[in-house]
Every structure is written in C-alpha cells, then in structure tokens.
Length: 226
Length: 226
Image 1: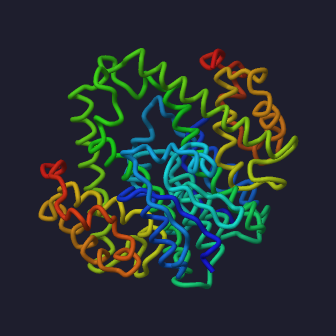
Image 2: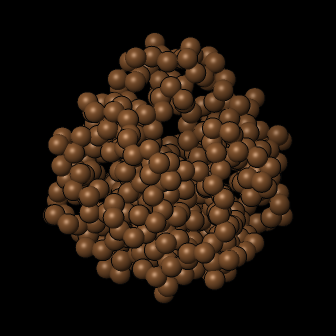
Image 3: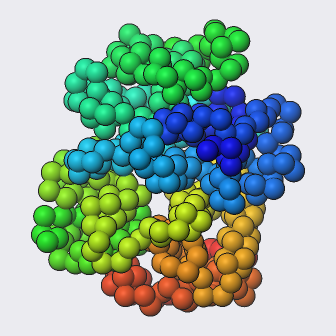
C-alpha cells in the first residue's frame, strides 16, 4: 500500500522524524525513502527541488499529492488512513482541544529549542550578540517550565493530550528527544524526563530513531545548564 | 449555540482574525468576545493569563475547552462543527493535500512578513543590523514569488487549495490582507492582488475586518518596494 509513497529525509531532523512516526503509526511501512545528507547539501538537490521548491526535508509524495510540511503530512496521513493503524486524533472534544493546542504550541517549543542549539547556524557571525543568545536560553527555560507543568497536571504516564497517544505526541516527541540528546537534565525537568522514557521505546519511535544517533550514542551537553 | 464561547482578541492581529473568520464560516456568530489593546498591554492582563499562560491573543474558550493557538482553534472548530456552516476541509485527497500544505507554508509566510514589518519590535536596538533587515526583505520577496506562482498555477478565481474556500484561506488570508495594508504593490504581485480582491468582500471576512482599519483606512507603505 505504501509503495505509492516517497519520503526524502535527513537523519535526526525533527520534522522528518514526525512524518516517519506518523507513517509507522498508520501501518504504512514499506514506503520508498531516501536518506539525504544536510552536510552535503543534498536537500538542495534537483531531486528534492522537483518535489519541494523550498529545498527542505522532509519532502513527501503520495501518488501525485505532495505534502512537504511535516505537520501537513501528519494531518494528511491521519485523514487519508483514518481507520488504519492507530487513530491519532482522539474522539472526545476535550482531548481534541488539548491535542490541537499542544501540537501548535509544539511549534513554538521547537522554535525556542532551535534558537538556542542552532543560534550560530541561524545568525551570521557579525550579527551575533551574547545578549540575544542569553535571552533565547531564558525563553527556552520558560518554555520548558510550561511543558513540565502541562505534563504534571495530566499526571504520571499521560501523553500530551491525555490518556491516548495522539498527533500531539507524534509532532512534539522529536523536540523532546532532541532536548535530551543535547544534554537537557532529567533531574531539572523530571516530568519531561518521564515522558521521554515513556515514549522512547514505543515501536513507531524506535523504528524511526535517527540512524546517526544509533551510530553515535553520545549526544552533546549544550543544554546541560538550562 | 455560540454563547458558550469566549474570544479575547486584538484588532488587526492576523492570528485573532483567523479564528474570527472560522467562527463566521461555521455560523457561530453570537459568541462572547472582548477587544483588548496590545498598546495598553491588556494581553498580559489576568483575564488573559487565566485562559492563556502565554499572555497572548487570541485566547479562546469553548465551554471548558481552551484552544488559544489560532491554527488549533480553526481545526477544533471545523472538527466540532463539521456539518454546520461551510465545510472548511475539502473532500478530495488532492485538495486536502494542497490545503494542509498551504496552511503550514502559511506559517512561514506570516513569519517572513513579521520579520520585515516588525523587525524593530522584535529586535532590541543594540542588536539590529541593516544586513539582517535586508536579508529579511529578500526572504519575503522570495516568499511572495512562491505564492504568486502557487495561485497562478491554480488559475484565475481559485482559492489556495483549489475550487473551494478552505482552512488554507481562513489562515492565510489575514497575512495577505496585512501585506496590502502595509503597502504591497498589486502591480508587482498581480495574482496575490487578485486573490485579495476575490476574498476581501466575502461575508466572513468583511464581518471580521479589523475595526481600526475601518476607522483609519490608510495603511502604511513599508512594503512598497518589496
């Protein structure tokens, strides 16, 4: 069934990972995929540009339908394969409200993470300011406290929108995994640590774990003091 | 029906406007709402913080369900009131794919607009660089060309995902309206100009038009040269 799908992706990119988790959850294994290298700038290759004029990964195609944005692809897959694999949108209005809300706050979370760990990558050298990086770190710490609180309120063993795994987890888990890969302290953020531990061995997540993280299991300590 | 809904909003904020358009499209007139002033920092008031820990507008509540993010609120309203008012998610997989894709590219579009018109607001004086603002303007121009191309490809009179008005238009139209309010040239971007003209008198959009734009019909010319 998934033979009419193609995913061009990069290892460890949270947006790519979101789509891969969604594909696993919807039992869409067997899709065509190609791992490209950001370092070699393969995301700017003609093969990518043919699908994605922005030259970004993921680039995703299902038949003639192109859905490159990771959130768009997750929504699309859930909508097209509603009754296949795991349902990723809860039925109850309250859980749905929470799911949508957390999914979109997840974009802010991801942005605040990037503004710290990729500050040098995003900002040319002559435009960098210690004051900006300090502010970004403070904003990330504030954000982390929000998410600690959200999960704490739901109680131990909860997913982001409540009792069931949903699109909120599909889209936000890769950000959480990145945080710990970059040295976030599970002692300082125990509830996020518990959430990470709850999800990291889930089959869809394990099956799509970034290959270069498997090769090199040691992460960085950039976020140790956050 | 909409008496159990409350929207706290600010005039001319594209995220607030998205939710207001969705409410109109779903025939949910009659909701409680309160116009707050960003200038007076009313978005940081306790009334907002009680609903929205981020202290941002929109802040939206339906019964006990809180959905503050504008995209989340649009999805939630469409899901909860699927058969009421206008259907905002097309049935055909191809149009659905395009709708999701354009919605999420719409967030990039909005961000690139803000990075130009609110550069001084976002960046403290001592961290500003002409080189950064120039780069942001170039990025906005590139983005505008993408959207001109998207609409051109669909043909005259099209909405963003094809023949029917959808969540893509609900979420992206306010960005387009902002562009023209800030002086974008419809001669330079004729297809976007045509799209703007097609939508600006749609009942849901007219009913939710920013009140301070009605009071002061003259915009700014910030984007004249883009």
